Image (cartoon, rainbow, N blue to C red; front, side, top):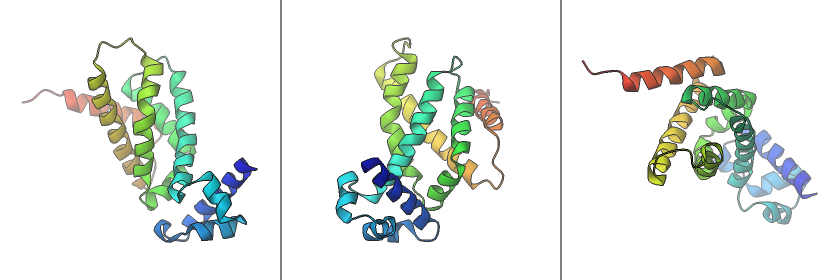
Length: 178
């Protein structure tokens, strides 16, 4: 029953977000529309942000499963996989972007990325933990900013086009000075 209740509350919150400001949506409104009690809400969540974070976590699990299968872990291929998954969740991501909730996704990714990096790369890198921590923070922040630009673009570029853009980004960073 708990998973069903969570799904009802998630669907209700997302439906309410289509017509109302996220900040103005109350827990009472969510539970009333979902046909559940406030006690049921608080048994599953401590805030409505946790509902959104749970949605982000599902997207993360999908992304992580695809990344682990990749033999090519170059940044352009990672971008291709990332935007392949994001495209599958375009409606949801556009909705949360409209409500400026993508920082919740970044916070979730910041916590989940280091263990995923360890699974994928393991001890095979010659870099210090500190350097890896900074590199992961840089890449997750960069990907989040690119995601926002991509979502705000009236015509979403394909995952393959986004991989080329990331490849160009690497070239721009490495372009020699005049």
